[in-house]
Image (cartoon, rainbow, N blue to C red; front, side, top):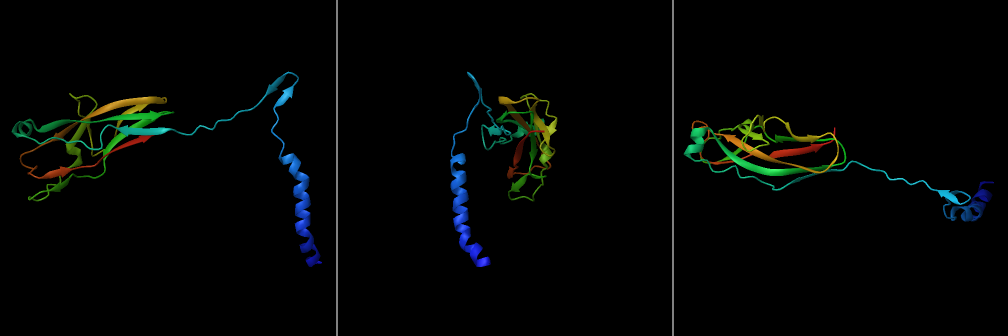
Length: 176
């Protein structure tokens, strides 16, 4: 009996497909009542989160005697722009606990917290790259909220020998 069913299966499948074909090929109809018709439209909207920076790097400057005496050197970082369709936060932090160092002296392991930042050129420089902190945020979506970040790097004659210091700073856009 199994062989008879196997022989008839393709024919049965063809007949079922032929019977259903006209109903599957009909155009969708609007719901109509006389001269008035309605349709349902759908648009799924997902999160839109876009973060841009005006520059991929920032030169913190080459400190001179006056900078060491002041205890810091100041520089302007990139402008950060967030485009989102919901509440958002942009956080700033370093990806390492210390600056990378290359030079002829022993690595001073300059702390990432020596890089402080503010949202105004005059400060206050109360946030540091050693700990994530909010650069900007909003309670609703925005077509572009921007903020320039200003850096101040702590200097010390005793602990900052000549050499090249690098630190990667991360900007993270999130939607809470």
